[in-house]
Length: 335
Ligand SMILES: NC(=O)c1ccc[n+]([C@@H]2O[C@H](COP(=O)([O-])OP(=O)(O)OC[C@H]3O[C@@H](n4cnc5c(N)ncnc54)[C@H](O)[C@@H]3O)[C@@H](O)[C@H]2O)c1
Image (tube, rainbow, N blue to C red; front, top):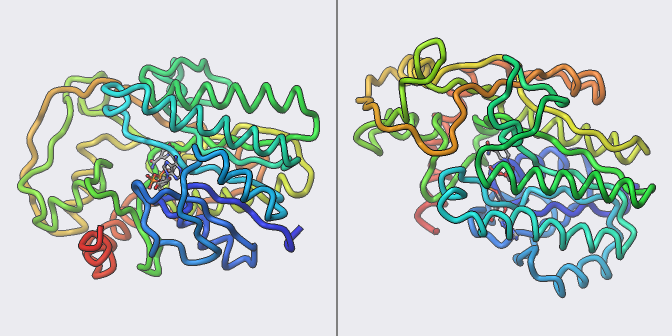
């Protein structure tokens, strides 16, 4: 199948660009479709970048007609939980409707393999300490719901069309940056904790806000499962190999199964950077569950995935190095 192409939507974004790098290094022929709304063209280290929108069905038709595509990996999406509470339709349009366009194209052009970026937000407030793939799905914000509806679509399509198989990967908190220093997260306005804390340590913001310290957790702050983006990217390569080998649809958590509180993460960032930046406690944000940690066994069993960077200090080090890099400065200046 290596003489056909893998279509990667959102491949100029944070996670997509790390996957593109691993797939490119493995010799896959890649087409990247990205509207560059939050992505960066310089982060696409392999393949052909088509600047365009997944909502553009004429463009999809052209891409699927002109190329032999063996699998689609769909990273394109909108990802800020508080924004989804303010502007839910943006999330249903970009995460659900646009993925439907892509699935329609897959059906029309007989592309039978699909990898979907889902999220731990589909669990809402898990009843168990660790959210496992069969846990109740009850998202508490429009972001999570927009992704869950797409998971249902994938499942329905795979039942209606026997040849179609998908892997939905439910990411927990993705963090860190590639160790070569060429790519990393580059949102114009970062919002992930480790990025914000790295900015505070680098003196780019006066202080860091903790959103709520009255949750029922070990120290009152939210607890999350932080997964290194390079381990996550490797899971995608393995998910692609799994589908191309003819295996059946599956849904997999992507996390390490270990939770850290906001205060613990801040402590690690202060330790690694040696900077004691100011921290303030602000109100809770709407849509934030107290604890979200993965049960992470199924992915190891199904894909044979073994994380290599399960180490919060290593995650923080790579994120901080990227935050300080000339490459990121250049990208931000050109935005
Ligand atoms: N970052 C996380 O912690 C996390 C956690 C769970 C799930 N996810 C999911 O992973 C995916 C990638 O997230 P990310 O962190 O890399 O975000 P990102 O914003 O860096 O990447 C998204 C990419 O998609 C592009 N894009 C968005 N809408 C598009 C459209 N309509 N047409 C074409 N391109 C479009 C953007 O320009 C960007 O390059 C998203 O679907 C997100 O919901 C991310």
